Image (cartoon, rainbow, N blue to C red; front, side, top):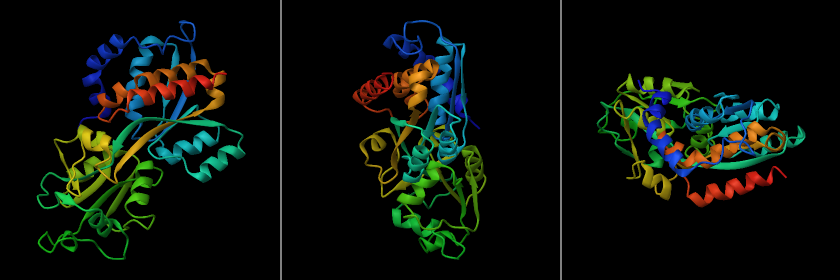
Length: 311
């Protein structure tokens, strides 16, 4: 099975050439000097491939800056952010009001940066030749808990009278939260025949191993495994770069974020430089690992916002 390290590295030569041609300014310190220090990052498994790809490039220009990237899920990452354990928190959903409140109580000021777009992708087994196009209502019928064992024939009587096996991100995942809010309208998810995991590779393995399985995760994880999985159209629209960027792939198109601790941006030069490098290169790295970049003007605005944090 392809991993994200493999996918990122398979495109890294081309992306590195592109970055060099663009004359990236980040990664050279405030005055062009070499830096040292530590940067702690945690959070979304969906955003992690971008962070890892950025870090591959950053470590080449600032080898003495040690960047650790954890994958605790969006919610788990915010818990560490609130505890003051990290400089940056990756998230595949906006920060919640209760998380903002806890940060305020902890005396931690933060800034939100959007880094890319993603399309939460519904996937089925390659041998599934019936569920090629589902509506949002179909998804609700399948995934909502109603005390019953779900069968494919519940959606369409012509479909197999077989129990559906469900695979979903864990409850600390921003991907889980997004699906729970946008599709299930915050009602309970199905409890029978379901496996939850913070590791998206576990979900991939589950769906590839069972003809009656269905699951969901970020678009890039589908791209990395598209030879083993089938993406389901939603309302006749398939997830791809164009439909995700335009928002046509609705309601499963979503933004991806990095939340920065303001104090770290001001007092930890390595953390500031790494965040600057991230914003300068997130678009290219997002596309290298299968996500959708933002408009260049949005990255420029984000860099201006970051620079203000140094004052």
